[in-house]
Amino acid sequence: MAPGKVTVFGGTGFLGQHVVRRLLERDFSVRVAVRHPERIAALFPALQLDAIQADVNDDRSVAAALAGVEGVVNAVSLYAETGSETFHSVHVEAATRVARLAREAGVGRFIHVSGIGADAGSASPYIRSRGKGEKAVREAFSAATLSRPLCANTGHSSTAWRTGQIDAKRTLTDCGEARALVVVEGSSAVLDCAEKARFVDRFRPSGRGARR
Image: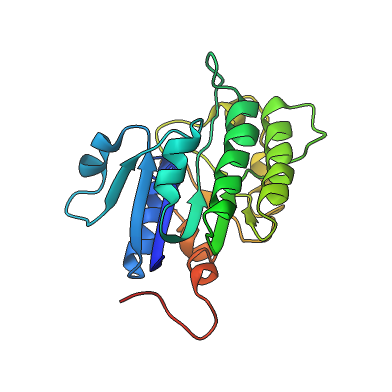
């Protein structure tokens, strides 16, 4: 296992990109696991990244992305259902797969990025899937850290935001075990998620820093 190496699933997403950059700033080695690794160079120019093709619906590719790493951040999310990609398939089934395979691979630190207000009993399909996903992830990887960020895309508000599934007034509440990320649409007011949620510190075993 490579000390200080972290796999980020969903690392090309809006939130995932910030996680990747913050980890690199702290001298971690980062592997970005995404469906389209060819996009990495354009998103992270001049940065040293280990890019790997991975589909969170496929055990084999997920296992390959997890091989030899110390920590994992699952930042994969879905805001609009399309065909076979449903809230349940992404936030519950795929999230469980990543957590289970991470445990089987001997990963030491696992962070699951959920959503603010996650509630398995909610009438909202999005919020309900987030709540069920948290429960399933904890069952698959009992030591997992859950984070519930609120994130509004810079270009346009997410479907969940626009349809009222997420209450904008709850920006810094209901944050789970880690503090929330707040991204203000159309502005530079970004509270870096790896810093605010203390993601990075959770990858540091007591008495040892990251690989330099």
